[in-house]
Length: 216
Image 1 (cartoon, rainbow, N blue to C red):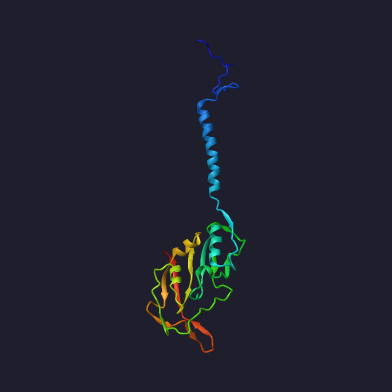
Image 2 (image 1 turned 120 degrees about the horizontal axis):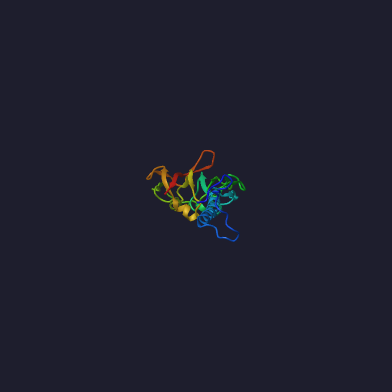
């Protein structure tokens, strides 16, 4: 047996492969796993970011155009205070008076844009026949979509729609069918002056049925 002298050098380090020698399988596996982890880590960091979008200009347009623009921008819509709307005046043609946030504001996708439907242009007065009943009976509108309720309006009264909760982004037709009437005032069966009444100063006060709108 060969004797070990103090001058002998003993190394426990892993031998370095010669140039061109294949890497050990264990190290190959570790290297491959590392290469896979990096792309996934980068993807994970980017996925937490929320898309930023520019609010489109929708004031001075009508509701149908506003809904289309907001849906294309991946934004939700909340509506306030329609009307009163006379018979024959469709919801999609209702004027948008103001918007919040303003056009060109940068917001996160899915943010709510509030539209004030008290448009700047006067709503046209309804055409009421010279001969008509003295009163009109308020129908049952609760349970109808707001588009169906709108079509149910007769020349005998106008509709006023209050706050409409946020919904979207959706195609305008989907929006119209996604809201329903959840409350009305006066109650069904109430008799009101047909069309409205003339007030003391000579003006005209229309007969109005108030609707509360909710999600289907």
